[in-house]
Length: 329
Image (cartoon, rainbow, N blue to C red; front, top):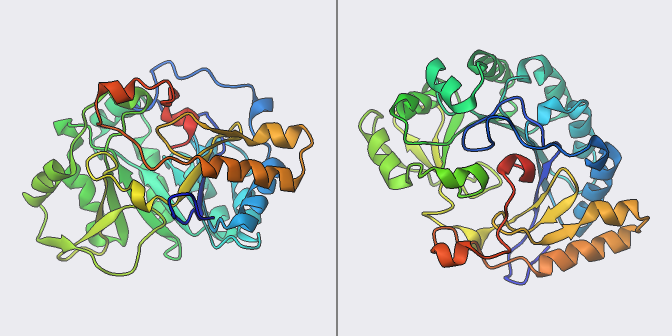
């Protein structure tokens, strides 16, 4: 699908649930968020129908997210069905890894192409501070299990918070002995993230440069579906990457749209604008009607976000008010 800016939109991120088994301080309040009734969450067949229509329009890559997607039953089966769908070339999953160990074999058998595992620190005390849960051990077990399947690409997603105990260099060193790409994701001013300054890419390069061997920009084949740019590090099996949506805006190359767990199609993370695909389906709309609504939303996809563009812009009523768990991380 080509949008009005000439960008090829071929990547769909699908939130399958607004529920999560962690309470990360930059994602949701300690008491969690008000969950919607399960009847309002897209059913498996509804997700598959939307994906089939999207594939006919040009979507080729799908990322499954949450909340935490593994709290939803039958996820390996959903992956298998998506992998067998005509037009879909790649299916990947983002998870916090807590429930991964028990399901990893099923995902491998289903044909999952890649895993992104969220891991903000290797320090147990700091992990409890960030996630408000004591689950670091289970996440690490999930990572160890995933490493048994080299055919599935593995990436670690780390959100720097400016907490010294987070020890970002220690996280980066996970890429040394394993073909794991460690990506540092700049804090987004969405939901609870507005309360944190985070760490800029320039600051990170300085921090990592003090302890990592020499590194240089990676110039090989693309390593994923998104905007991450990577560095080769001397002696490392994996690479170090940066996703810096605020300080290094990449909207001109945006290739993605998002579907919330309630079936709302978002064309830009910052804005609440979009279309209700669940409503089209549950009112008996045809596939052609569904396509028309999707294309209407795409026609309104903005040139880009204005994160960091000043308070006067941030106060726009069209700015997204939901937290990342509700949108789809």
